[in-house]
Image 1 (cartoon, rainbow over the protein chains, first blue to last red):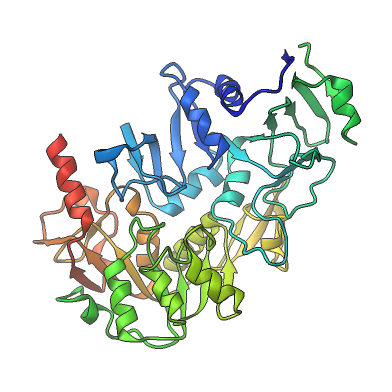
Image 2: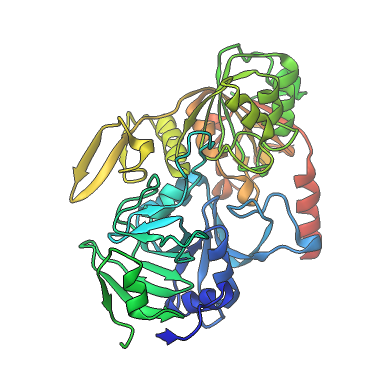
Length: 218
Length: 233
């Protein structure tokens, strides 16, 4: 997949949604991954999981639908869909940890070539750490996709040979969707480039110490 | 036997200083606000609190922290936009934090209630939250040894109970209640309504009465929300 321009967050969300198989059980992380739900159609027949205890989560609640007892992991009021189910936290995390969830889409600060994820803590000494369900989500789905910008505001690439921030999970990410391209990761550290947006393969390669494999033509 | 009492104050009357108190809720959903309010009024101090969060805004758990009644908190997500009382206590070095991934927190509580001495979990392996902990490779995957979290007291909010102490919950307010009810020496429950024994369908009970020690009926917004939902159908 090649595009001449960098893609915006909505377009990227649409691309991710397009890669989710019909009938999947999916958890969408807080922030950018939540946008994916806007592009999941009836044909997707996706069941959304929220780790605070629900399968079959619907869209955000509006006005008189708002119910303080029905919130998502971001503590936002949501709705239930027909066929929804509630369960307690131990069951909710067991269904992830047990490998029953098909896909989890998460944001990230850094991802390593072997799929290490850093998305919970900058490691700065004055930062108050908060992890929530991030570490459970990272290791808890059959496929973990990351959505992020490829570069920081300072222009540093966030897909690295090794992460420098404290890790959320080791070797857990299988695909990385960014504004500048799509990457498939492997245990061996081989990073296959599936798409490039507003960046040539050589430009990408010049910004990283990872030796990328070009599969954008496939 | 479940002891039904008339007020939140009565329900929490015998919580001692230095107790480990498990408090249900994820954000405000399922947080037993009235029981926490009574605990605050009652004056118990040097508490260890177990909750997913470390209090929001100026109510519930946040006020216990503000009043410096909490020596230590075990939680997964203390820092949020409105956790200013925790933030202040933490930066002042006046509260100890044990940060636990959310799924490990739930499972450690479940383990306590189920008589499990410890368990190996993949969550957190290779991260700073597993530093110093025993690890083991089992069938090619790496795990971290985690221990149960026992409470002296659990404060939880359920939706409805029967007089025997069987409990049902409402929507995502169920969250930590069922595990915490099993993990404490004494489980104190606030419910919207206590029905005559036999009125709850035994197939639908989430927490069986064996875990419920003290119970008080307090109507909250959950009752109105359920009534509105019923009316819409």
